[in-house]
Amino acid sequence: MKFVVARNPDADSRLRYLVRLPIDGGLVLKVRDTWPRTSRVFCARVDGDWPPDAELVEEVPVTLCRRRGVAIDLVLDRPRENRSQFIFTILPSGREGIFWQTRKVVTTARPGARIPGGGRAASSSRLGRSPRNGRSGTWVPLWPSTTTRRQHRSDAPPKGRRSTPAATDGLASA
Image (cartoon, rainbow, N blue to C red; front, side, top):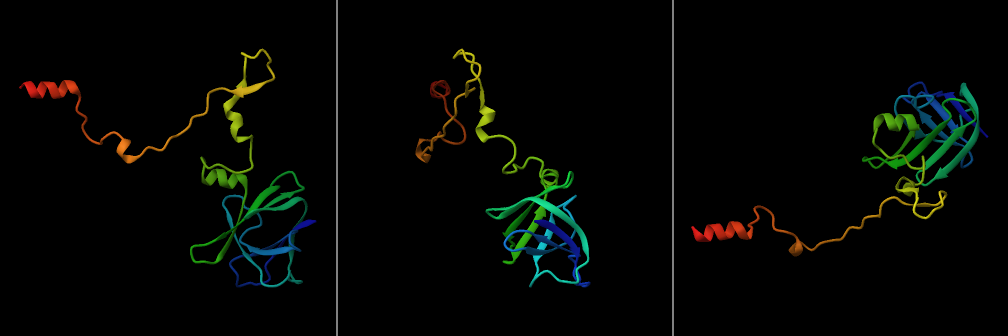
């Protein structure tokens, strides 16, 4: 399995490169750049097969290429620029939009955004070692989980000024 990047033979296209993903019999996309280094790269499907006259820019062995919902994860067999993801979405115009991104690009663009599939389990941040059970290898919650309760509008406290019994008594005596 190889990940192939080539120059787009269509000189009029703004998407200057072609990439071939080793999934679904070889998915061919037109892309703006050879790798998403500084921002997400917009992609578009190529009508037809891989063009025979395409000039190869890069050919890299693939460690993993798998579809996960609306995304295709790509892991290449090289030390740098080796992990990326293709996201398939519908644009507001109704057309298909494909974006090629890396973890670095996503965290730079949206520093507080959560990236799925990375790091540790969601609940592990609330777990710690418990000294109370005597065994240091047991993980228990450090604090109890909170629950929320829906409240009907009539049960909610009134908005605005609140009158206290002391304030009401003072006004009545005057």
